[in-house]
Each structure stands twice: as C-alpha cells, then as structure tokens.
Image 1 (cartoon, rainbow, N blue to C red):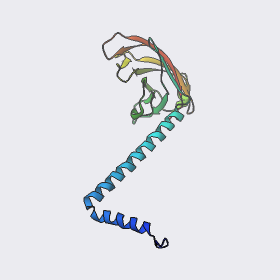
Image 2 (cartoon, rainbow, N blue to C red; image 1 turned 135 degrees about the vertical axis):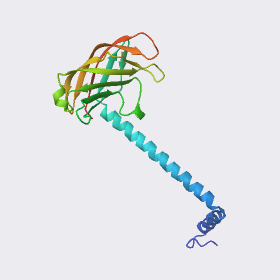
Image 3 (cartoon, rainbow, N blue to C red; image 1 turned 120 degrees about the vertical axis):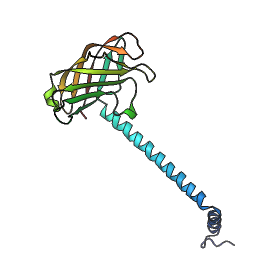
Image 4 (spheres, one colour; image 1 turned 90 degrees about the vertical axis):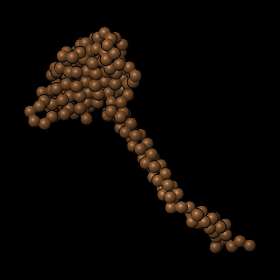
Length: 192
C-alpha cells in the first residue's frame, strides 16, 4: 500500500529526475542553461518590439504625411523632430514616416531642412529649403530632391503638440536614372 503522506509516486518521480541530473554532464546542464537564457532573451525582444510598435501607433495616430508624385503616397505616420546642433550651426527639422530605422515601413519618407531656430513656436509661417527622400517600396528606387535644388517647405503650424506644413511643388529624381517628377504634399504630427 502506498502512503500518500510520504510521497509515493512523487518520491519516485523525484528519484528519476535526480538520477537523470546526476547522469548529465556539466556541459549538458550548461547547454540547457544557455538555451533557457536564449529563450528568455527572445521573449524579452518580442515584448520590446510589440511595445515599440504600440508606442509608434500611438505617437503617429493623429499624424499624416501625404505626397503627390505622379501617384498619391500616404505614409503611415509623420514623426517630427527639431534638433539644435552644437555651436553656431543652425537647427534641423526632420520629418520621417518612421520612428527609427528599425521600424521603417513603406512608403518611406525623410524630409530634412535647416531652420532658423530650435524653438518650435518661432517657426510658424516660415518657409525653408528641404531635402526630400522617398522610397515607395522596399525594393524600389529612392527618389530625392535634385542636387542643388532643395524644395520649399512652408511651416503652417508649429508647436509642441502640433506641427504642420506644406511641401511646395519641386522636382525629385530617381536613383535608377529615370526621369524626374514633380512632388508636392502636406504633413502634420506632434513634435517628439
């Protein structure tokens, strides 16, 4: 008769597990530890990626970046940053359709312009010259403003909560040597 108060089958299972562990070499145990650690890292990375995607969706929820360049391109979001460079160098306004390079999606857009101030409130009503880069598809050509021909961008609203403007008509050329096309558009998003 099995005495369930002292373990019965659980005691047998424990003995089998201990026998297996004693029979395992240190290398095998180290290998198992390594595999478990790798699994934990993978789960952690998936969680971080998911939280990053949710943060991007929240940050880009009320933003837009729309271009017309022979065809209409609507980016999923518009991320606006304003950076003061060191020394007497001008500030930089950067608009992207992605929060960082690892989260790039297509169509992918980068608009880069030097601006007279790093204070957003002082930029409303300003017109600046910008470099524009557009890639409609992951395997497609990159379109960019023609060398020496920046495109005018008008900033219509500028503040921490809302930043908007228009891209005047300008020429962009393809990296595959194709003919240039006219581009224009509008953008809006919160400063980050």
